[in-house]
Length: 198
Image 1 (cartoon, rainbow, N blue to C red):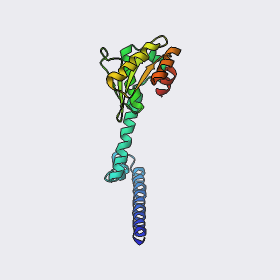
Image 2 (image 1 turned 120 degrees about the vertical axis):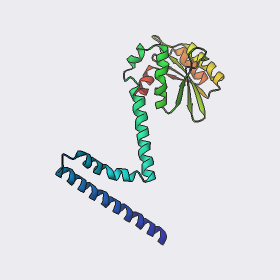
Image 3 (image 1 turned 135 degrees about the horizontal axis):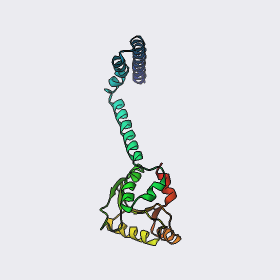
Image 4 (image 1 turned 45 degrees about the vertical axis):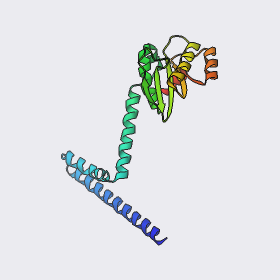
């Protein structure tokens, strides 16, 4: 018990000393900047010095680089997505398939677009952990019928997938919804796709 108390006291003392040092450093840095407004580069270096010193601490460095990585991925995926679903209506089929790749990556999947012809009913292959999913993408001007569901069901067997998804910029016919329910195929219609874009 005594060792634990000693360790906690030592950690608290270290944190207090670091906090005192950082506060004193920033007070000195801001004083220097106000006294020498023309020397911007030195003032900036002084302000960043505690941050660079903190990067030598492995947990802090790991946290910072992790946050930077998440930010870059979020911006990259978000920048490729139109906000208005009406922009999707102007795409052709191949553009729609390419567009869906970052949409699904934002959902946590590793996405791969198939070649187009000879894809055996799968326009995209999604992976999440050990699970594999096949996606049939339908960028149409009218509602989607049973053939899209039939194609993706065939792709499940060919790719030995765990599940199937049909995604469209329109809506599904009642027959397609019924067939998808029986075959446990996830349907993503215009409304759900619109929510995925934000």
